[in-house]
Image 1 (tube, rainbow, N blue to C red):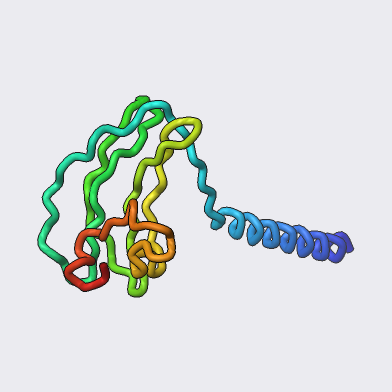
Image 2: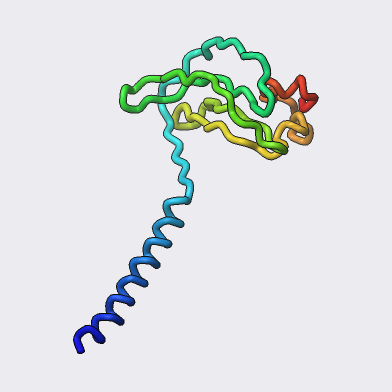
Length: 138
């Protein structure tokens, strides 16, 4: 008789665990972006020779990242990134904000460079990512 009482309780417990697991996995998939302003501007970029073009890939140039543990900038070397048709890679860049310097992370933008700054008032700040000019995308 106790077995009959425990079965619904076990089923309810199992359903609760599975439900909470689905909720946690959905929450863990959410992306969070935190911008930290630092008072130290990044050093000048380090020159890296751009390798010969590689079919199906885009060269992502190196950039200065902030190493909070060592409290200094850390150079991240350039690398190949698999091409995403219909998208253009925007390299990470540092901007000076009100509270200090902020790193804007690199990202894939859907057609972000096709307008070459048109409609934005000027072409200031526009640059063609490496490898895209040869493809006629800039």
